[in-house]
Length: 425
Image (cartoon, rainbow, N blue to C red; front, side):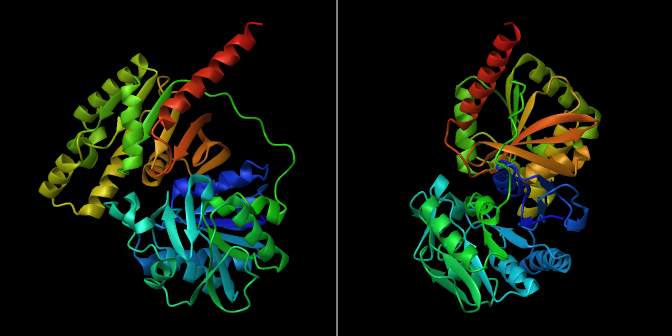
């Protein structure tokens, strides 16, 4: 029986928190079925369910989370952690309210900070690299802009549950509602977590991968000996479904460093079933040839100079913003799933939770096993596809420095070179 259930709202979020546990040696499973029963997680200490609620209406998102939590409570799962986005995107208020209601607990500690990547909470306000989140790049996201920097206001927009703001060194709360903890450092998260654990107040909690990194020690999960990192193919295919400026800067830097870059056309992204047409199949063959000729390739869903051409094409089809998002993710899923069998594909890196989920769905893969973090927010996982193991690197669109992709490619090549040198000794 599992000890800890983590409920995430998107796939990359499920992985970047699940890997905090897996990296400590706790057997961890990540599944994409919201109806998956904890009782079926054989051999796992930790089960992570991607509820895929980020883009749903708040009431629907809350209902899904409530159902997952009620099943876990009925099956006597010891600890439940609601994973939220580190930039507070999605249905945070509705989902935290649902967790609290379904759990039967009176208080929910919420630790939203991720100080390891400079996302901090001070005085109940959430900051991204020193800027209030609503004034950061996440405030201008075209699909899910964050409107509130004040966390009580953000939660209150979707929930009537009382919200209280606390410093990291506050005693365990005695009242009712959601308790938002300040944290500007990992030590702050550890201090708050230790106080809550000592008071027996971690049966339910919420936060992002930041507090997720603290949970193994607090809950006594994992093993002293960590599993070895696998050998990875140095050839790298980067699949980008994110419009976040952070990711766009990473792609630009990689192209300048010599990565081959292919931008999908508006028609390729928005015409349903495109990759199954004769023209689409020919385009896929050309992409496979590009992979054979280049060890580092960027497959980019962004238009050059902004996404105006795709928006105009979508308008001509009568597609609204949400339908456009879904069509683009589905198209990338169809394309990449059709390439997975190719020997031209080495290590796959996918950015954006929608992209990752659609690729896995189109490939018929329902579960990923997180292995380790290559760096903060960048997760190495593996899956089984057509009887073979394939390694996948994932990251949220909002993570990382501009040189992230080039640095990763250099690390893969250095690892491969080290393996070659050892094999000839």
